[in-house]
Length: 209
Image 1 (tube, one colour):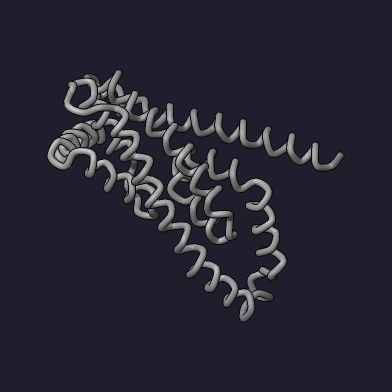
Image 2 (cartoon, one colour):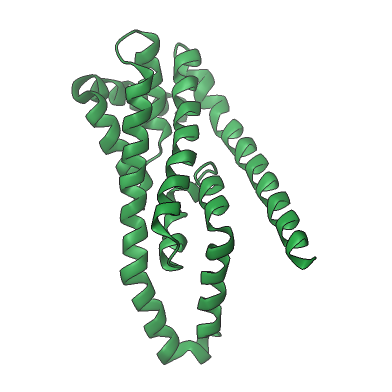
């Protein structure tokens, strides 16, 4: 059932991308990078299939994907920076003692993103589920926007290349993609978490010396 749904959805998105071209990829990735639950696999794997068929070019796809990802992530960032910060500060001032939150906790979050915001944003874009949400704590903690933009685009570019390549090389076997991609994505995300953890530990050790 799920396999049939995946194949049907991919076929549908193929037709949409064929109709709207690179703009459709931009819109799809902007939605995916915001807080709406829309998987990037549904957009970029079909785009990779169209590349293998000679109907699209890979560089404009990657560019449209990065630009769309940035727009969606920037929307989350600004939303968290303005609205999220105000709401949490208001809640802490009124109910902080009841929910065990203090202003010092906000300062710790700000300090974390000041020290590790770049690497957190970069790896966050490569980890399933996290990549749609990583912009929220970055905005909430007032991370430098230029750094946020750079590392968001770098992470989004790598992830986009992975998905487009999957569609390009395995697009003639959608059943295989449906059966294996989720597992491969989880393994890849776990590896990113391990590398990220090692990086944080090494940086903390150096700062202690």
